[in-house]
Length: 397
Length: 222
Image 1 (cartoon, rainbow over the protein chains, first blue to last red):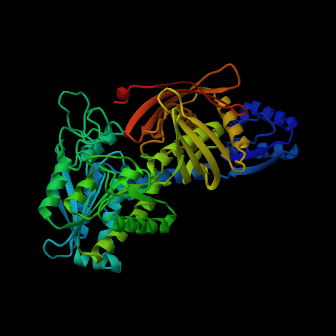
Image 2: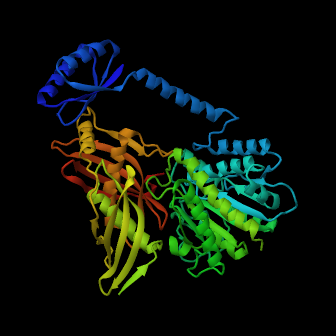
C-alpha cells in the first residue's frame, strides 16, 4: 500500500479527485479528503489500485508525491520496535533506563546493581513505609569505616516520576564509572554515597495503580476521609509554621506532628545514626530550580554566600550539557515560604551542603515528562550533583 | 513607587505565569501555543486603594518550535480587596508570530470530516506521550486554560495545565468546533491538583472562546 499526497491547483482538479473518491472498487482510504484547492489530499491506496490511480493523476496533469512508499514496511518496523522495547524491559540484563518503571522493576534493578557491582555497591533497608514496603538505600563505598558521606534522595513526592527514574540512572552511573571517571573515583576513595531512589514507595505505587497525580504518603488521617501527608512539610524545621496546611485533604498537609510519617522518620534516624553525613541533596520535579535553605523563614542562612555560589556553579554545569537553565536561590524567595522541609532540617542539623533540585521541565509537561527526556534529565542532573559533591570532597568541615 | 524585583523572585514568576497564560489565550490556536521562556525584568508598584501592579519583560517561546521566541512586555494588576475580579492584563509582543493558518486549517478540516465526534482521554498519558493527532487538541486546551488561569489567579496562586483527563467533541450546526474538556490544573503554591470543566469554542478565523467553565470537587478524581 502506498500513501500519496496530491496537490490540487484549482476547483476542477478537486472535483476530479472527488470523482476518484466515488469509485468504490479502488478501495481508496483518504486521510485528508478533497475539499478545497488550498489543502493537500492524502490518500492510502491498496497495492492493486496504485497503478490505476497514478495513471489517472498523470493523465490529468495533477501533481502528487509519495508520502509513504510501502505502508507495510512502516507498520512492520513499528511492531518490531514495540516488541524489542517490551523484551528489553523484561530481560534481566538490560534495564531500560529511558522508560518509567514500576516499583517492583526498580527494586529488582537495585538488586541487580548491588550484585553486578558488589565491590562498591550494597543495598541497605532503612525502614518500612506506612503500607509496609521496604525503604531501600544503595550504599556506594570503597571501604573505610563510617567515612564522610553524601546523601541523595528522590521521589519523596510520588508523582515526580522523573526523579525516581533519574535516581536509578545515577545509581548505574556511579557504579559503572568508578575507576573510569577520575573525579568520581577520587571522591569514592574518600567518601561514601547513599542513594534513596524511591523515598515514598506507597505513593509511587498509587500513582501507577490509581492516581497519577498523587503526591503525599498514604497514611490514614484520624478523623478525616482524606489520606496522606505531604512528606516535605513533615520534617522538624519550623514545623507548624506558614507554608504548610493543617487540612488533611490538602496536598501540602503537614501531618499531625513532625516526623509523624515513617518515611521521614526512617531517613532522620539513618542520618542521625550515621553521624557523618556532609551533604543532603534531594530531587524533586518540576520547575528547573536549584535551591538552598531556608524555606520556613525568609532570612538568609549563615552560609548563604557559599551555598549560592556553589548552586550557581552546579546550575552552570547542568546547562553545559543541553542548555537547560536552572534558577538558583533560597526556597523562601524562589518558590514560597514552606515549613517542615527536608533541607531546612538537614541544614539546621548541621549538614551545611543542603540543596533541593527541581528537575525538568518548566510546565509544558510538568509531572508527565515524556520518557524520552529521562536520560537527558538524568545526565544533566548528574553534572550538577557531581559539581556539588566535588566541592564537598574538597572542602571538608 | 515602583520597586525592582529579582527576576527569580516568586512574586515576579507568578505574575509572569499569569501574563503568559493570558497571552497564550489571546494569541493561541490549535496550531500555536505560547509559553513562558524567561523573565528578563520585573518591577512592582503598590497603588493605594487599587492594588499591586507588576511590570514585566518576558521572553515567550513557541511550544511547537522551541527556537522561535518573542519578547513581550506585560502589565498585570491584581486588584485589592475583591478577589472575584480577574487581574487586569495588558501586553505587547515585539515582532510577529509565525502564521499558523495552514496547520489550523488542516486541523479544522480533519475534525469537520470525522464521522463520529472526537473523544479522548489522558493527554498526555502517564508516561508523557501525546500522539501527533492529539497535539492540536492539547494545544487548544492549553490556550483555553490560559483563560481559566487568568480568571482565577491571585498573587498567591500559580496555575499550570497538568493534564487533559477527558475531551469530547460536541456537534454543532454552525461552523465552529466545540469541545467539552475536563482538565487538571496544578496549583503550585498549595500543590493541589484541581479538576476543571471547560467548554471551548474555536474557528480558524475567530480565535478561542471559553463559553463555560467550572471548578470540580477534588475527589471527583479518586
